[in-house]
Image 1 (spheres, rainbow, N blue to C red):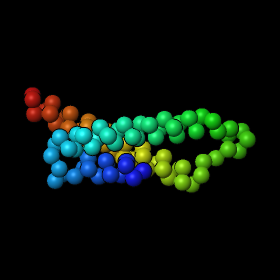
Image 2: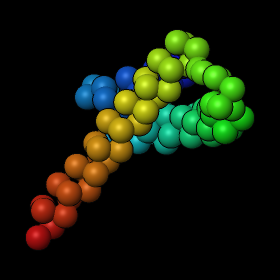
Image 3: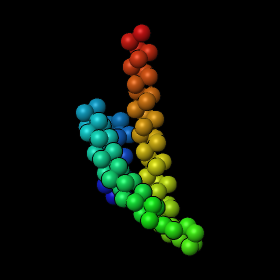
Image 4: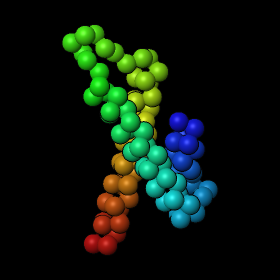
Length: 88
């Protein structure tokens, strides 16, 4: 989470160059994707019929990662839309 938070905060830091922001976004997505894959494997191994649950920490971690990911992807989408509108 420390790496994810660092890269996320860099990706929204308007004091950084566009290149630094893009690098932070790429690094965030690499780390987040790896974490999400590991979390997905854990979820797949849970047997809900036997009462398996996630810990509070796992639930909060999952929500935190997905919230940052959604914000970053929305930002990318908005930037794409802005470039398209400017070009036309």
